[in-house]
Length: 213
Image (tube, rainbow, N blue to C red; front, side):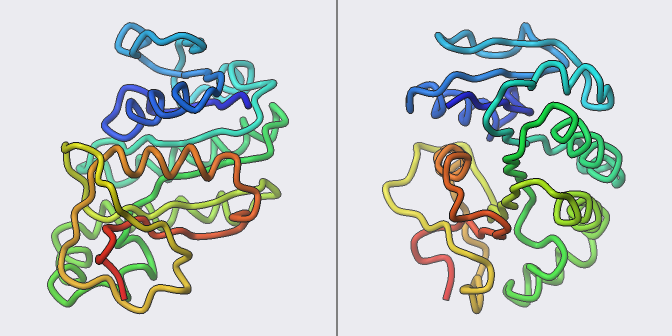
């Protein structure tokens, strides 16, 4: 399939690019800094800004799915609210019906399933970042797109773990402690979900093999 990717130069996005190519997919990477996108066979890089709806729509037209793996600076507490609605409109304009959005575990009601310590952090020192994520999701869930929202736990730069879990939020009772998962495991999950229509309308928690109850 042909996958459009936003965030191809980031920690999760760069690994998603590699995973998508390894899985045999064609990729269109839309990036503000095209020179920073890893050169791989089957990858087309298009320069552009997230705020430019027309340019984004032109770049992703003809793609089967769009993966949005853009985090933005943590100190910018309106980044997702400014960009996600534009991404949704560009997807609709381009006729790309499938959208997989990377959020973060701790955003919105996902924090209710966190440990006491993690919940405290999400709702105090990290509140602006997580509130921004949660508020931006309304543009996705209220759209007519075939969407899936992904909530990774804490992430780290490490070799991809052999075992991890991607499970619907409603099937998670608790995420104990502060589980930490390699970036690559989230990338694998995103590529799988891009082609998985069974997850349509789903909110998926991605965590370590033992990082949920």
